[in-house]
Image (cartoon, rainbow, N blue to C red):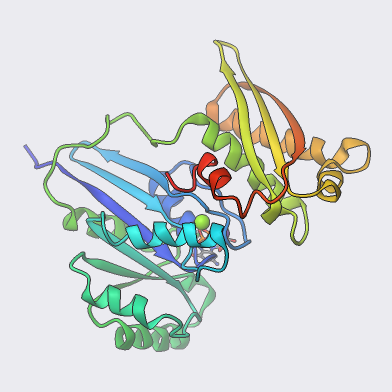
Amino acid sequence: MKKHRSGFVNIIGNPNVGKSTLMNAFVGEKLSIITSKAQTTRHRILGIVNGDDFQVILSDTPGIIKPAYELQSSMMDFVKSAFEDADVLLYMVEIGEKALKDEAFFKKIQNSNIPVLLLLNKIDTSEQSVLEEQIQHWQDVLPKAELHPISALENFNVKEVFDRILELLPEAPPYYPKDQLTDKPERFFVNETIREKILMHYKKEIPYAVEVETEEFFEDEKIIRIRSVIMVERDTQKGIIIGHKGSALKRVGVESRKDLEKFFDKQVHIELYVKVNKNWRSNSRQLKRFGYNS
Ligand code: GDP
Ligand code: K
Ligand code: MG
């Protein structure tokens, strides 16, 4: 019999380099939301890929962001912990990303005892000469890291990276039941789905002033009934979210319902309402309540 391997794999990198896209390609399910806006992923998401003789537990950490206000510094905690509890670290950069912004961070990677795979992503967007020059650049910057050029979007070299991860994982029994795809409760996916629609449909500061909380998640054999509140910071934002005669909020509801029906494979009824909750972003008790420090 083949030996069983299990372990924790953390994906880190700047916003929008493609971390969620890669994780979703690995997991083969839409567990993590993907948009072109930065900071989409605020939480640490666990996706689990199971095989007969392996279990890979992946977390998709938020981008590497300097602490500016409380929400961001709490995101930094996730990034820090990525070095502490991983068996393999995936550091993702994208083609064209070059600036040596954070010396301390690079030092940390160079001195890490954990194997680091440096994933140079989005190579589908670049010419061969640029690619070669980029590979050289990263080999100079992080000689200890093992470099893999990939395209998470076009699924190029993704399987090779996954196989390499398996080789690096320790022999261990599974940490979670083998049929479990994620450790996050259903409500988390509801919140993230709604937030994704808000990111897609509203401009400027609105998405960043929003938090979503699902107050009710009731499932029976035929249907899932959901009631969620969209929290904003100001009355004007509430008006924008709702839109003319409720049309904007309705669109968020309809699109969220469609995604959730696909995800849960069941009919979904969703009720959305908007509440003003001043300064939720700077109130650390609130942050805790929304799960940032868990
Ligand atoms: P994250 O912030 O690091 O999690 O990045 P996302 O996974 O959300 O991706 C950000 C954007 O980059 C999305 O528009 C993705 O479709 C796009 N993207 C991700 N991987 C690739 C890739 O390999 N090639 C191209 N061309 N785009 C990609
Ligand atoms: K993103
Ligand atoms: Mg992401």
